[in-house]
Length: 201
Image 1 (cartoon, rainbow, N blue to C red):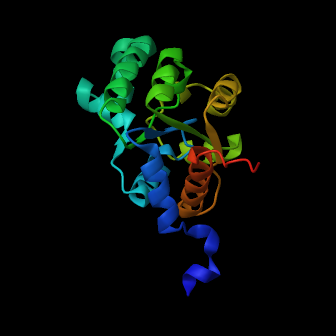
Image 2: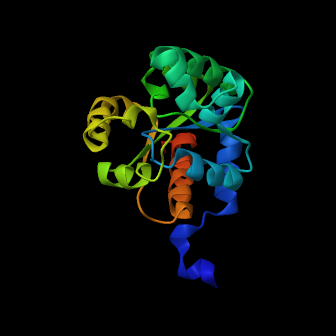
């Protein structure tokens, strides 16, 4: 009975199955700012679609044998981005999955092209205030280690937002249950992946 009371928090199994089938070997790739919820929402989305989940930052850390902040400190952002691009390509070539990418990954033109070739991209768009509330709880954000993290985040978002907008789909990440955002992503994927309706006559 709870399902009927909260229809916006559920997604029909048929819809999820249809999306997974329509993807073929292609992946769902989540892009967006730090704090947008790519990892937490991505895990739930993967469960709903019965797909593997991969977090690009986690895979980068495994490959490097150190944390993302340690990579930034030891090698700098340029080296990190180069490694990030290689890891994302390797993950995409593994087949169908839900892949959460780091905030800056989508800014790489080659990475965007590889994502387009291997998957469907979804921008989890979140307001600056939402992002700030979330990232303040974390200490592992190298780009925000500045005197004014709020201004830095807003500056980064201003540069990245037009590029994030190139993603196939945009879904709002906001302060609602993650299951609601997952349901909205699945509905958006279902509409995006559907074959064009035949035109009468």
